[in-house]
Length: 107
Length: 123
Image (cartoon, rainbow over all chains, first blue to last red; front, side):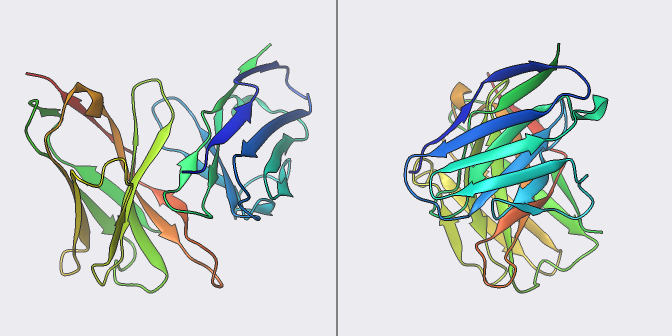
C-alpha cells in the first residue's frame, strides 16, 4: 500500500492567514491526489482532485500543487468556515489510501 | 444532485456480520464511469478505504479486509450493500458510502458521500 504522510498534524492559524499543508506519498502517485475537508460529525467534502483541479463550487482561496510524491494544499486567506480537518488521498494505486489528517485550529 | 444514504443496524455483536445498505437518489447507480464505494473512519481517527463495486458487479476490496468483506449491488433498487463478517471491536467506526467518479479516463475519486452511520461492535 502507498503510505500518505501529512504535515503538520495540527495547525493553529488566524482568520486571514495563508495556510499550507503538505502531503507526501511513499511512492509516486503521478498527479492522482485529492484533498478533502471534514468538519465534526460530517462526511468529507472533495476540494481538489488531480492534485490541482478545484472541485466545482469550492472557493478559489483553496489551491493544490505537486506531482510525484510531494503535494501541498494552500488556503490563501483563512476564513472562519475553513477551520476543519483536511485529508489527502492517493488514487493512483489500489487500495486508495489517505493521510492521517491535518486539523486547522483557531489561534 | 446525487444523494447517498446509509442504513443498517447501529449495534452489532462480536463475531457477527455487519450489514449496511446505501441508497442512491438523484442519479442511476448503473451509470458508466461511477464506482460505488465504502469507506470507514474509526472514532477520532483517519479514513480507511474498504472497496468498491461497479454496477456490472465487478469489485475490488482492500486486501486488509478482503477475507471478510462482500460488496453487492441491486440496480433495480438503486442500492449497494456492505457485508463485513466476523466483526470485532476494532470494526467499530463510522461507515460512509460514496460515489467515485471517473472523468476523462482518470482513476475514480469520491465526489459524493453519504452522511455516514456509526456502527458499534459490542456484546
